[in-house]
Amino acid sequence: TQVPAYSMEMIYDGADSEGVASYREMVVAVATMLARVGADKVALEPYNEPAYYPCDSSGSDDWQRIMADTVRAIRAVSSELTIVATGACGGSIAGLVNLTPGFDDPNLYYSFHMYEPHSFTHQRSDGTGAFASGLPWPADSSTPEKVTETLKAQMDAAGLSPVEQVMNMVAAREAIARYFEQNWGPSQLEASFSQAVDWAKAHGIPGRRVFMGEFGVILMSADGRMGAFDADRQRYIEAVRQQAERFAIPWSVWEFSNPHGMSLILPDGPPIADAGLLRALGLASQ
Image: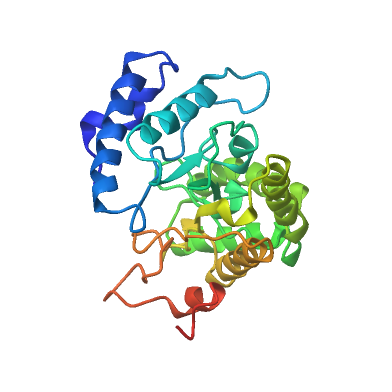
């Protein structure tokens, strides 16, 4: 549960802002409490998906300073509490590799969230009632024509008028074409993970302290308006998990339960584990 008084929104006025100082004070108070619980029992991740952009040299050094100052503040109250640091740009790999870990110590982990490509993992439209679903994984397992045909069939089944369908396809067709042009698949995943691994090696950080803190895919909704087909979702989840394990990167999946099927629990009905997702995660026998 998020406390509104300490929303991440308060940190976006720059490293020297009052909001950042207040947020850091809160983090130190939490760190002090957790240190009493026991450094071997808990870890503290002060920030989730910080929205500081861009992540290259054209950006400011605000996030670098915020993260470094936060680590130093926590270390002032506990040298042993495990800290999970993160890069900017929504906690992505691009943000992580732009972070300079001059504050590193053996009790620090470095998190990234893996939702690449976002066009596949988060298939949904900002438009009310719009359809944006059915992109495959990997891209070369289907065609733009097949995805378009399936989307039209789902709009027919939902009772959309011809005008509504045309308007929907104007937006959807561009996204479909772009996805297939990028041709996302195993090689792109490997390249993304390699960036994180190479960054860690360059800074003398063991791979086991690089942490994939989130990954997941929206499951197609019952009406077909959003999400990926379950078979594609499972293939992606398995591919990402295997890449992490190949590089000995610990991982955590998003999440236990939510209404979009991006979870370990089936989105509808009683709270039953999603057997297919457990298999994709290599947990079916556990």
